[in-house]
Every structure is written in structure tokens, then in C-alpha cells.
Length: 145
Picture 1: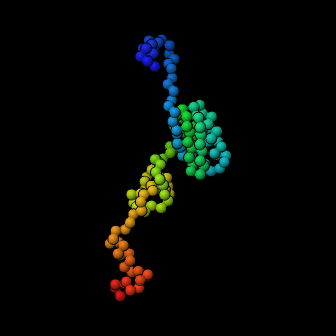
Picture 2: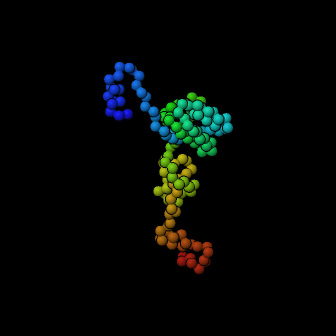
Picture 3: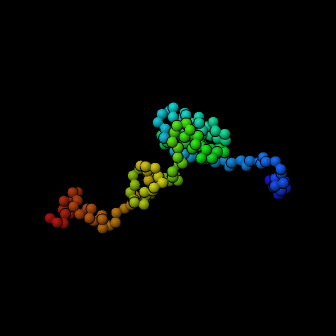
């Protein structure tokens, strides 16, 4: 597409223009699937789209990844047409863990039950002293009695 092609397109009388090809991209979606039939219907609906190169369906994570020359809105529309609710994959992937130890680990973009994997928060020395004040391990350590 040089300058000559651009100028010739400006002076062309025909109404048909060259359509630009969509860029190759990966569309990640969350689709709730309960059984093998749901997975099969979603896979068939998306793989039959024009421009879809590969389709990866992970039923346990409710995740569908479509790679190819497709648009996210069209993929969502196709999945909704087969009877499933689809939404964009909601978060940027972090190292996720089940049990958070620090308040900074909570993230609104992570799916429910997961938080970012952060270092464990250690108690301050004062809190540690108060926690061991009434220790059952050492009976002589009780300072009140």
C-alpha cells in the first residue's frame, strides 16, 4: 500500500473498497458451562465463525479462548445466540492463591475465591508480644499471676 495505491483509491469511482483484514488476536471470555453438551455447543458455535483459527475451552475455569481474525463483540454475540451468557474475561492474570495474608492482596478484578499471590504479612513485634502474653506453652511466662 504505497502512495500511488492510496491516490488511485481516492479517484476510483467504484463503491467497493478493499476491506482491511482484522488483526490476529486472542479473545478471552468467561462462559458458564455445566456439562459436556454445553462445552460442545460453545466450541461448535465459535469454531464455525469466519476467521476463528483455534478455540480452547476450559470448562472447570469457565474459560473460552478464541484465537484468530475475530472481534470480541461478534464472538460474544455468537455465544449468546447458542443460549449461553458470555462476558469478557474479567481480570489480568496474577499469581493467584486461595488464602490471603495481607489486605493489599485483595483485588476487585480477580475471580471470586482468589487473590493475588503476595508475601505473607508478619505481625509487628508489639502484636507478637501481646499474642504470647498468655501462652499455654510456658506456664511460668504469665505475668499477671
